[in-house]
View 1: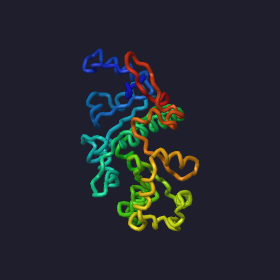
View 2: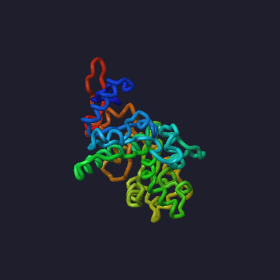
View 3: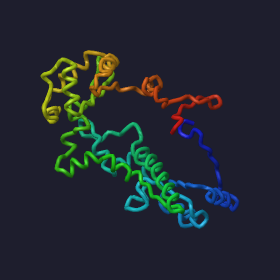
View 4: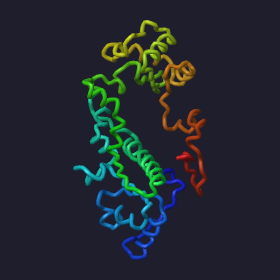
Length: 286
């Protein structure tokens, strides 16, 4: 229910004549058709874009796949982890030993797939309004990950290897995570020097202030001094202390805390909806 709330699901056996007629009738009256099979499957069933365009010239037909409709991997099976690997994203997600870290949530599927699918549908609907006919759109989840790498790729192409100087992945003391006295964690995102230097003043350590961001590398600056400071208070004490100070400090909220988070509640991102004997939770604007 959390994944499919407010959706209507139907099952049609389109191998049978009456089932196929039902499918074609749905296509004829629809604005959008979204399919997520491997390239060629819909054509095998006679339901590819060129075939159904004759039934509904205004139809917007979107193919969502892992690798896209072309390329050597187009027919390969895959999941989120595979798309992150092929796109180069997994190379940037490594632990202290250099081992790629598997994210606990879907990056390629959602950011590279679902969000780009929505954008493609909206753009195609706008184009149909402009020209008066539908179109075909090829959405690849792997393709969608590449824009997420814009900053590290720009560094790499500029002869600056982001894997060596990990600006956004733990290589700076001012952009890092720190454990607190209660065993929880804080995120310090004081990437610009104005935030870091303001933090130094606020914690009464003006000697930590720097003039160049590279002076805050974990290989140059004594990170343990900052870590020791954060271990002096609990996570929530730090969060309360930093509120309103513009220091880019945030508590690392744990999953079981989300429903009671003041920020999540204020934005009404999680709401309970009755569904028979169950209670499902969803974003009503999703």
